[in-house]
Length: 323
Length: 266
Image 1 (cartoon, rainbow over the protein chains, first blue to last red):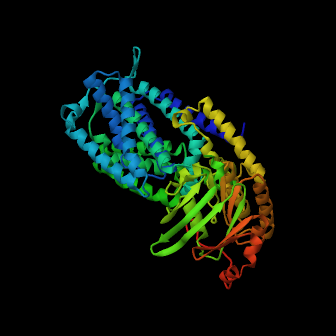
Image 2: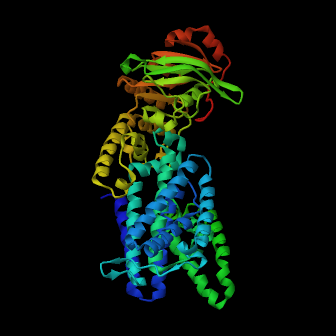
């Protein structure tokens, strides 16, 4: 077994151990719910990280895809009596198709047309959620979204959801690793380094970028469905532009072109967000400071660790070892 | 009709104009299977532009490129590469963030089939394909003599070896036509000798090659036919010795400094 493979397995084991330790240390619903939020944000961020880090494209509409998953699940279960698992799958397929339709024309072009297109989609989706009448429940949303369940076992509390969401995150980490260590993943990394050379190796760069974009949208949709079946309620607010932006910051902070980076970024920002919310109970102004603080974080990361925390810290460690 | 009746590559009346500047003008030539075709000429003669049109980086203003009897002008770059046209770049275009082996594995891209779903679940078909591609890449690395550097980051190698990585990457695609854009540019005398020996071995495998090169000894050694380009036009196409004796060729070169022309995109 190579040293690289050993390090890979060790890193994975440490992450699993940390995640498994939380419910042992505390059964507080507050901490467990933060744990679930980190997992859900992490699922979206890992997909966005692949898009940013390997296709070199920004999506400013990931919150909309997250919302499509959530609303898809809510609408299919409440209005059509669909099984929650089936609703989750159907919402993911539909979101993937929408991403494909957006991605094909925009990713053929050079430049950041995808960012603009996804920004537009985010706005359109927000309007549809708000104005969807009885289908989406309008601004007040849809209550009583059913829980996911296996047989008689429902994922109906924070601990159970925690135990469902995190294995999905780890599965995703394995998926990402499998992708990056394969022909398709090497093609993505090649595009990142030199598009002209990648194309001279018969890589269809537009097709590869669309593939990653669709994957990132499907991931976001799955996270959104998990959210809807967990909080049992959807309304338009969580799926608007500020959350799309926050997701981009998560990926930048953790580092896009690494498997763990976006997850660590998701954890860091979710915890900061929640801390400010708590602080807001004492000093009301703190709640509105999040956007300022995120701005400062982005500037600091770009100045000192442009490749994100994970790559930044490991390269500093490598330099230290090298003396 | 058998494809073998055609020359491998036919370039017919090719013309490329950039905003009024005629970079390639009415260029026609044919490259027979299994031969090495040299492309020489002073700086700015349009040699790299010609490569960029043949490989689909630029669409020609006029004219056609026929590969194996099929018109490939207007096809996207990756589609032309998928038909077996491989190239190296005058300004190195290696994948800096990847190992030497991974660079060469990217060259094998067109031989893989597995899709995204099979890949993320790492199905047995993906494992089998991966093993096959790795063997393939290793053969290419051994051929150019870089097998001991497989795991090294490609960016850690000196320029001479990075050039070999590019050649290995092109060979790994098992091309029917290999385009080499000034492979000896920036190499030391010793590295150029090693390269010359490598090119001889590649030519001996029967691969069809078009090479742009300023090093005349290298050109004389390996090319069966040489085309001289000047100001976008073909001056003459002949055997290397006849070309060297041609007074028009000498006139075209007179007073011209030797070093590089354009960029990978130029």
